[in-house]
Length: 151
Image (cartoon, rainbow, N blue to C red):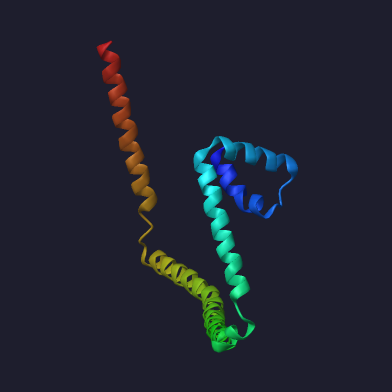
């Protein structure tokens, strides 16, 4: 068993909550490891101090401090409710306008396309593409003929 595992199981070892096999393995490790033995002593001292504090604590002592839990929790709930309401309003507003906005964009695009078609902007586009293809094929053919002549 390694030191990290022993230190992890130390509180259960002190309280006697481990099985006899695990307790034996931890005890054997503590007997052979000075660091873990020191850790065990410190943990036992802290456990004793903790137990003394619990015994010394009087039931009336806790009443000396005001209970602000209810007020704090009510304020947190109020803040959370306000945040949720703002989030719902923003989400609802976005849902109403988002689909309408997208249709407006499509409508504007279609309208501009129709106007450009009427103005004849696209009429020479097919001729330009054909012209570019002709130049490309001519230059590729010339290059192939030229490179073929070198061979």
